[in-house]
Amino acid sequence: MSAIVSGPELIGEALRVGYRADAAILDGVDVRIPPGELTVIIGPNACGKSTLLRTLARILRPAGGAVLLDGADVRSLPSKVLARRLGMLPQSPIAPDGITVLDLVSRGRYPHQGILRSWSEDDERAVDDALIATGTLDLADRQMDELSGGQRQRVWIAMALAQQTSALLLDEPTTFLDIGHQNDVLELISGMRDASRTIVAVLHDINQAARFATHLIAMKDGRIVAEGRPTDIVTAELIDELFELRARILIDPAYGVPMVLPGG
Amino acid sequence: MRRALTVRTGFVSVRIDRRMLVLAAVMLTVIVALALWAVTLGSFPISVGQVADTLLGGGGKAARKVVWEWRGPRIAAAILFGALLGMSGAVFQSLTRNPLGSPDVIGFNAGSYTGVVVAMMLGASGYAATVSAAVVGGLIAAVIVYALAFRDGVSGTRLILVGIAISLFFGGLNQWFAVTADVDEALRAAVWGAGSLAKVTPAAVAVAAAIALAALVIMPVAQRWMSMLELGDDTAAMLGLRLERTKALLVVFGILTTAVVTATAGPIAFVALAAPQIGRRLRGRGASVDLLSAALTGALILLAADIVAQHALPGILLPVGAVTVCAGGAYLLWLLAVEGRRR
Image (cartoon, rainbow over all chains, first blue to last red; front, side, top):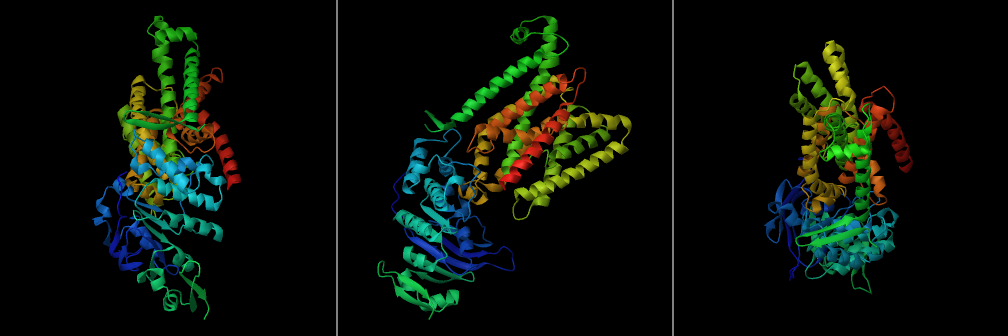
């Protein structure tokens, strides 16, 4: 692996996406994901946040517009080449029956492998590093079905890490987890952030978003209504606009980030 | 000790599952032993030693004829056809993520049968015509099933339900042909439809061997695709797999492997359905359906079934298809019970 000085920049230009032609979910969205940041996309249900993420990940093909990774249209890149640079953990990934943690995480190496080179030293190192980084090394020989929800999510993140992409997208990585495991996973993701990696996550909880994001994108009705540092954009007006909720904004004394308390 | 064995030399570096290695060695040994024993069975007495001698180029004239022309081709066909059916089943079960998603259940065999029946009614006979008709019939059934099951992608359960319906539809067509065709044609179709290795020629075995060899070469690539697709479409796409192209290629692989068998021997049920699941269980915890163990298990099942078909009832030669259908019924009940309890 060559040393990457700066994480990649991901840009969506005039993205138009609709499952049906007459009802666009995204109607001309321009978005820039800043390099080296942990960007969190928030917004009410059905605001198009997951759709935006899946479009950036090129799982959804936009009816109009383009997704650029460091200036190159992702559609112009061979899929394996792109998969070495841009990874995504879907919202509910499927673990085959009885698969072991080691086997699953190893599959994240697919874009780096060939038929005769399907387990190089680089592969082994990347998988070990991913297991260590997510605290799942001890689980390597266990089966996925035996693990708790929090452990399982760590393993999926390990698989995405083993892929060694400099851009990593996560679609609601805390869904179905209790608050302890939610925090656990968010700490893990936050700890993965460095200048050479660009991370984007869709989250539900505005307070968790404000706490962990370095860049926040707020969406409603398929549009971006605000973006910037959480301390700059999380206001009572924004919460009202997004969720039609009267709320007070306090500053978390420990982390200096805004906290949303519902109720006037 | 980790379950995997890492091999790295020069430009090759691969990881091999130890249990798979042991399983493959054991199954190959059992298959060879069973095959040697099968050559000795029959009205012309011949010992294992004589068989080995004949295979190595010696033996008397009569022994050579029995081994090379009578029993050998049929045994080779059982092994090769079983392996091809096993692989076909593994492909479709992996694609549908369902142990019921095998070509004999989801209509491809019935389609091949219809193709052959139509070819017979049009007066075409001979190996090439039968093979082409079976392949075309299977493909038409596959296209119909795929088209009817498609809605923003194909889900396993929908594919299977549509497949069962299409299977019944083609089955109805086949019956209609049998009733309306003249007696000779109907009889030929019925004999072919029972599924038998009795009429397998050395030429047909050679074709099957060539296809099996090609399948063996393709197997590692196909296996990797299957492992990725098991993770779900989104994850597979994010790992750099081109979904629709990969699935289409796997479907063609699955249809070709089953069609070459169906064309030669007629529809042989159950092997494609059961072999991948038995192979998976033999590999133990943590294994999903895979091509190699499905191929080995399939070969073993069909070889054993054909021995039963020929020699279990003294004086009666059953079509091997009848044996596999009986075994398959029992297996299917067991599978439904096990799956039903798990859900």
